[in-house]
Image (spheres, rainbow, N blue to C red):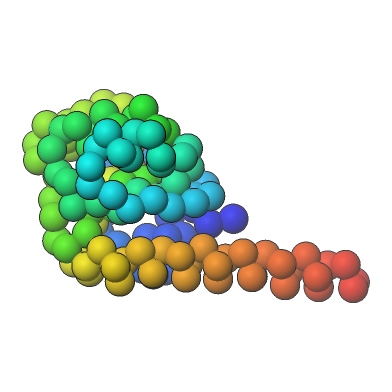
Length: 126
């Protein structure tokens, strides 16, 4: 199970606000058009964006994503951070570009899934 804490460790992400590091990440979404994200991001996704205004926290709350990862060194504005703290939203950051960061998130998810499958296979044999 890939958690927000494990993703932080694997990718060396900056912690901006960590409300629940044990939150499971089940998918991912990348996007900056907030109305588009609202209709497409799924609960428990890791959402990668460069948007930084307070509406990011509102969309994160509505979609129930596991975390928001700000790419390209973007930092949330004070209202976004305040709203994230108020609503228990995990906010992370990275200096990597969107494309590279999304690839890294996918690789972390696949790595974790393979590790779980290997563990299950070992347990079956024993």
